[in-house]
Image 1 (cartoon, rainbow over the protein chains, first blue to last red):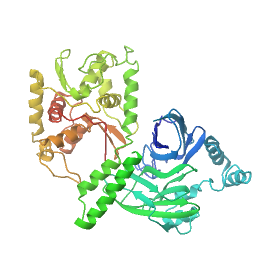
Image 2 (cartoon, chains in turn purple, blue, cyan; image 1 turned 180 degrees about the vertical axis):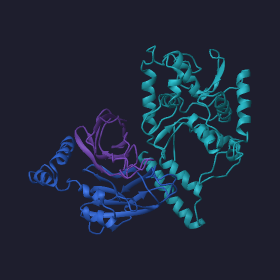
Image 3 (cartoon, chains in turn brown, red, cyan; image 1 turned 135 degrees about the vertical axis):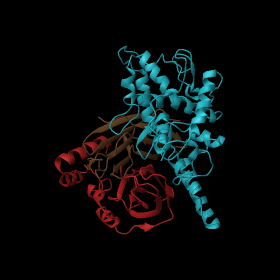
Length: 104
Length: 157
Length: 270
């Protein structure tokens, strides 16, 4: 199981802004160790964000996304106390899901 | 369709080997064509042309309605902040590309109805290159592009 | 970064572009400042802070104790604001200690962990994180927005400050380098970035209060001791011993030069 994410969600003027910071190495598979061996590719391929069970964002990521990926998006609606669930899957099949509460 | 099902579906796809199952899901209405994921092939594309054709994009139109924010200079290519905000209506998808990276497509986002036409993320850049944002809105593709000067590449050790 | 920040950046970009059209060009320093502003939110050092907090509160070592009774100078267990007053003199050890040397004291005395075991991994690497480094990240995070107030009162504190000040300008090594070779003049550069001048109050404050920091080029959170060691490496000096009197003294001089500013770390850097 992957390491915990940091999710912040705040509602303002009818729009909930969600900021997600994920812990992941995001290895490209193109980088070589000092001994010349390739470090195997290891990166998040899919991210999904849900608000109270409804999908509000879906993402597919590639190897060009930075280590410890950061995403910001917003959606209409959302109220303080409601839940945002973010899930990711990586290319090795590892996955992680975290929940955050929307703040005002 | 909820996302757990989506994650499940992708897992199934990995195991089941793909396109056939996706087509099956689509045929029984589990995957709407609009929501169908970009073929993973687009992520291995080595050029913009290759990536756009893998994504089924013909010629994206240029527009002033997309604001692409990138730094003019990135102190380190390992983290280059990229941000898109658009006033276009009915935004369905937003994708980011780095035209000189080994694989040009960096990320692809689906925005269900109600999600704002705004995405911020961070990409790696091996060298000075163009960051391109592709927006699909109301069935049409639009793009914006900006150069980022990279003082230290972010793909090496 | 929130929507308003995004808008601010877009505005800055727009202004920068129009300014460029009128004046010819925007300075590289301004462009770098813009980059730093754009990456300032969403700091992966948060994860190191979380890890450090967990370590602080988890019983471990031969004595199976937590660090919650560790006295960082403001009384046993007080973490809030402690870093903004370090280094300082500690009666129990009769020494001036910086954060890392004080953590070492707490880990050895409260938890009974042998010093060699802790100092064997003073810094994080790609494959293995350093406990003492994560603990330091946690502690500094608890001084965010607290005004730097490092006192030079006790004779030992005065001595450490004077030694640190001299060390800062001490030229040696194969290149005849000192810290001051790079950090005592305004607007000098090695690469693209202006180097902080520690004799300029503002420079010293912004440099000191932004460490420890997550280095995007390394994908790791780096401690202040690591930063000093990196300076010594670039000067081609031998690597300082972890938590040595020398680096504590140098830290004392640098911390005092930042007094009056709000501590702003952990930072996020190139």
